[in-house]
Length: 241
Image 1 (cartoon, rainbow, N blue to C red):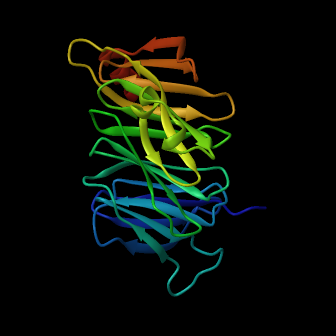
Image 2: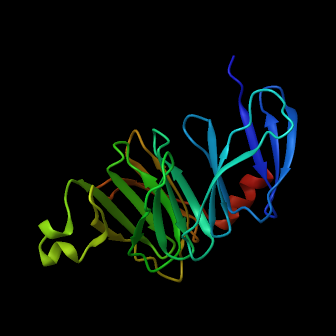
């Protein structure tokens, strides 16, 4: 039977590692700074933590107790403000991080390379997701913007027209990332996006706003599938029940 770990954190940075199946506390750990977001990679061998403006890659604790179960593998700098969201690629080679600085960064984990900096949003990036093929990235900002970025291998800026260059946010000898899709939700009455989640296999994006409305979209066309509105009264009733 596989072992299921649960890693919980308090906002000030204290962490607790639990064997979820046995409901047993394995160890406690204290990060040096408050942690805003944390996520295991698909293999379970690593986890990433947003520690202020820093992205830290840690080795996952072993199945059995050790004197130092948490081991820091790498610290990645680049954001100018707090990191708000993290997403791993399916092969654990790349990691996305979105921040309060309105940018999304793509870093390679298995070797040191120049990061990709996707710059287009005007508000904090609260969601960033790899599509299943890794060649597409979706980014969501709190002001209601949803962008689609596509990877074009073996292309450089020299091969692009002036109109295409307008959307380029990163280029290298291996290829370029380009902003291929822009969608704006246009919320009124000062509502903003407060949460979002992505289902990779079905290519579905769900977005929740501050008015209590959750909407499901089929990607990459961003066509609305379903919408659900939850009033404050319903939320309070559900919490009581």
